[in-house]
Amino acid sequence: MIKIVSFKICPFVQRVTALLEAKKITYDIEYIDLSDKPDWFLEMSPNGQVPILITDDNQVLFESDAIVEYIEEVTEPSLLSPDPVQKAQDRAWSYLASKNYLVQCSAQRSTNQETLTERASKLATAFAKIETKLGDARYINGDSLSIVDISWLPLLHRANIIEQNSGFDFLSAFPKVKRWQNTMLETDLAEKSVPEDFEDRFISFYLSDSTYLGQLTKKNKDITCSNNSECKPVDMLCCS
Ligand SMILES: N[C@@H](CCC(=O)N[C@@H](CS)C(=O)NCC(=O)O)C(=O)O
Image (tube, rainbow, N blue to C red; front, top):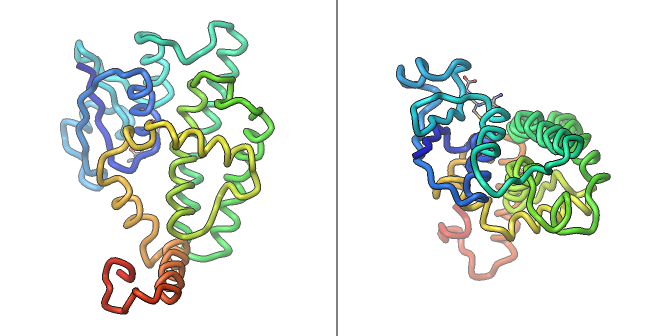
């Protein structure tokens, strides 16, 4: 069976696991701690990064772009167009998403409003581009899911968690992207492509007191508490 080596909140991994889930391919997954990388992992991974995919016959693949293309080639149904031009375009739009994963991560880690605004505007450049490509269909290329939808899923999923908690919406200026986000979240791919404790881990890393979005989250909760007559200061469910 295929094995994925992962870090729980890595968007590059999620792109790979979402593709495996979409294609209903079973796989093993092993999580590592990136701050204490095991020796076996360092020996295996040429760039020292996750994801890596270990094939059935123990070949090691690295770089999520290459891994996604490998999965595409060896499994059905294809989520890439057979037409060479469309195929190249699909790959390019997918790369545009993965090139922005770290942009989103750094925006989420901003420690003040000014930094968040500056970093979120870099991310907005990519969302503005994909907004022009989205039509009225369910997915980016029509009514069937494509590799492009999968690659943008980590960005859309994370933007949703940030909005739900902090009220800050990376997508507020992009109505078509917003609709696409809802469509993608209605599939079970976001949930299935991450571990059970993903949201808790994501929140404790990106929405802690040390980030600006974490401070917004805290204010958001305080407002919710003060508007809720049943919410007493000791009510840990609401106020913690
Ligand atoms: N270009 C790589 C990027 C992967 C990446 O940045 N992974 C991060 C975790 S999200 C990582 O392993 N970081 C550890 C490190 O760089 O030492 C890919 O597409 O697979």
